Image (cartoon, rainbow, N blue to C red; front, side, top):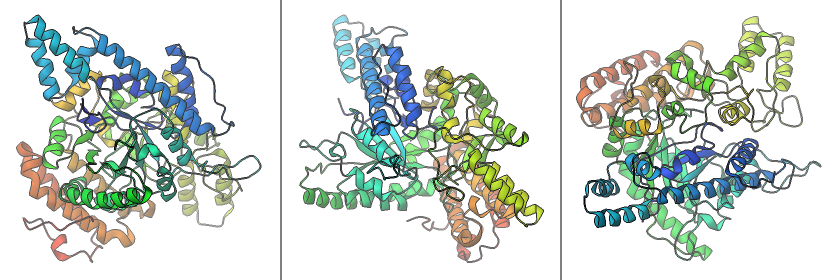
Length: 615
């Protein structure tokens, strides 16, 4: 049996969604061979879920207090080990179950995509020979492998922690503690590093044997980088290779057409980025492999010279045709499906109220907001319970929220200790400063709006899990769904969603849903439109100095899509091309000031060769 980390039985995975939506997803899907990702941001939620799941499983629970030594890392280790034990038991029971309608082992094989393993299963079902059937069933049981329990660390959420006396806790920052908690767990899976480069975290990875080959050349824990373009992948992969570390997977994510925080970059579109990976993948692997070999030799470590790397993609995928196109035309090894699974309570943790609001969401309800205290655009469901409470506090003249967890504290404008810009403590001070200033009324209003829009996402994103688990029935859930969510409306089972991914059945989609590439492009155009209207520099790179580069990248992306339209859309080619041309014309109207872009790029689309948009 091949190792599921290198050769998963499913071609899709379930990415991390907020802090709570996928916190217990491995217990729901891993036994069926489906990999998923949980967030390590909220160790308070992790400890609450460990207590809840331990009680359900009849396991003894010993609390780890938040003020105990290395509490964050120890909580994470304990929770991951609990999940590992539970999934192992689930798989053992699944292997022992009977091949009959409705059984777990039948469910396992019926969910599989077309593959040699699925063919073997179908052969077993068709045979009339009892001896052959028994032999085939024994072979199938041996092939059962769980999906990976992967974890996500946002690299930029790495605030230092201090002892009560003010002394810095060595290696006690949030990201380092989370990594240590994962590294000490018994999991054989991957850590997904997202949100960019953190040199301190990268260096710390090299201190754990789990991330380098053992004596047999095996790596127990692997590294996945979530990136938006090839240049970022090359830079980060190079830094890790110099430490003897290998990136086993580059997880390419759309900058805008995704849930949660949106890192739009300078107009890099998903298709051209994937084309860069397809073209440069072999060179990347060989170049970084040589660097890593030298580093391992210098460190006296064993080598796994045959190390390979996967390339997967996520962000806005909504149909089986799009999924298949990404794997065939761009040669990616797998895809990530996130927001559609918010309508699958069999997979995610979501309360009934939020589930109803997600199913009823329209395009105007899912907005790229300023809600995040990180200062990064954040996809938010405008009708969520969290947003309703935030607005109610404003209406009552008491904006801001309590700050019960403090994972996003960073501001020291008014206090010596950092506080969160979504907190009542910060907003009260900041709004008074604005009110007391002698600025024009219009400027005061704009600044006031910018302050009160910040939301308590580090606590409220856990609501879907804490409400459904009975931990905090009064929680008010924040929902970080991406724009693709609005095209799905029907609550689905795991079987229905997987069949939709693989094209065996189709969930109903809203009429007029654009192709994922057109949707991403339209989001960039919308950002340009917003900048043209209000010039809010923090929301768009296409305003000011980056206008020419952004416009060039977008127009080159449009040209790329025109060149490959016959392969990526086939039957709807003319409609796709018409959409491209319409968006190109609007882009030209919105960004006429980007005059330093080459004339050949700004000109109407032609069939000429595509210039490279990214490194």
